[in-house]
Length: 393
Image (cartoon, rainbow, N blue to C red; front, side):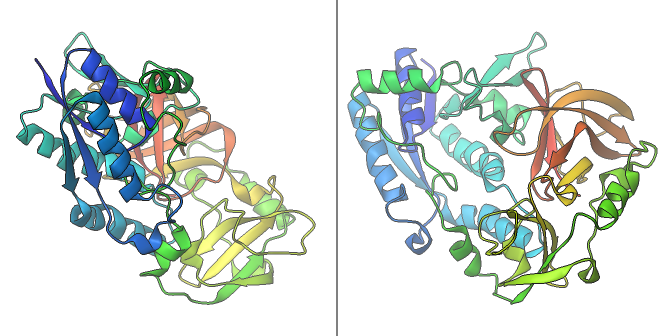
């Protein structure tokens, strides 16, 4: 009998995943990851980890499977939280959940499971794993396209994927809820968790202010008439100059006028609307530029402001991960069409991935709103996740 250790989070998805594994004949061990101790930054009525742990224990008892708690908080701070602080301090927007899967769930958690004699680890992710003819594995989008979570796993390796199981990936969320109700699981009606993985919902400003100091600065509004954002980023349609095409427009203080003030440019992200506190404008304001060196946040009015949009992006070297074995870091120059996602739940976008002189660029068919450095771009062939990397610019 194959042994599986499941990351039981206290939510309905992992609860049903545990039930399905047991029904499929696996020997199932439940393990709850404790990733954070500081309750002062967790909103107490929004899925605090202690309530999740109790729910996970109740589910394990109902299913008759062993339950353990593993404390990974030190590693989580070093690998995930410090990474978050460093990225925000640089004016970039990180995605901690992608790193949590690569560094915590499918690294430290996986190693702990293997020490228990496990053949696999399992999670409640809405994605699928396929075994290829050559013995390698592919990661596919979940059947429920509204819940597909393959993006969050875009940085795991072939070795990590080989040890992973995703029992709910073939189901829709409504079917998962029905199974939970049928089995009278305590999590059947529990709302989906939000925030950082296995921590709960976090007040991000409070979280960041633990380490990043407040520093008052100007919010400068850029008129869309700024020579039509310098002829829409210098009419970047020349594929022969991929560096120029993928570079964001750099606004300067003299390009606009001060409309409000902020407490630190590093607290903001491109495309942000809420939390700007810019009032009295005819249209809603959006962050279109972050200058942490000069502590300036640049905004533009309206969701169609040209400063919000870009045609291309560049992937940061050293962050590229190919799950498809036919690609690797030594691959020669190529140009190939893929479907690309630059944030979770974004609809897949048609684009061309260009590898040239050791650099990776993504050029979209349609201009993209809110391309943000520090986030992950993931590229797909139909439903199969091929590769990913951090957006450099």
